[in-house]
Length: 177
Image 1 (cartoon, rainbow, N blue to C red):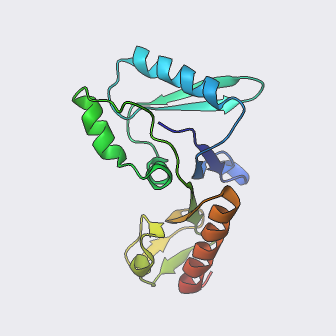
Image 2 (cartoon, one colour):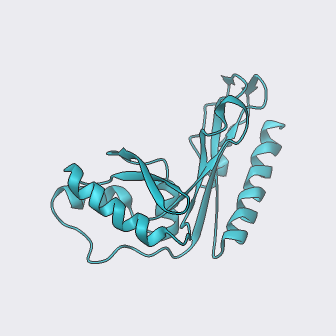
């Protein structure tokens, strides 16, 4: 349904850990990745939402198949305006959309990780829908644990990242980070 770019943590033992996503991801190999993903998904026998992860170098390399909802679900929905769960249920009933839903905007998700052991006393729920995976006030986190997901969305990738940074600043202002 979409080509997404993973944002990786980029440091230490978790350098290659998932830290967010960008949808859509424009890449010279995107068409080849989509065609390959469609062949893999069809051959897998899976129905509904199936994610295929690629490494892109001179050519794309499929490295993983995920027969479940993907971590990019939020950014795909924000970018396309489509309900991925509804599309999944339709696919399970044998009803597929006539065309792949196009991205109308660029959506970015970034996971904020605890920079130190901390207790989150702030209530972040007022920031929804700019944030998700909202912890209860009073939740304790060890250094490196995921605290909250933060989003940015706009017409261009640069503007979406600007929106994301503004939302990260709002979260940091509430948690004191």
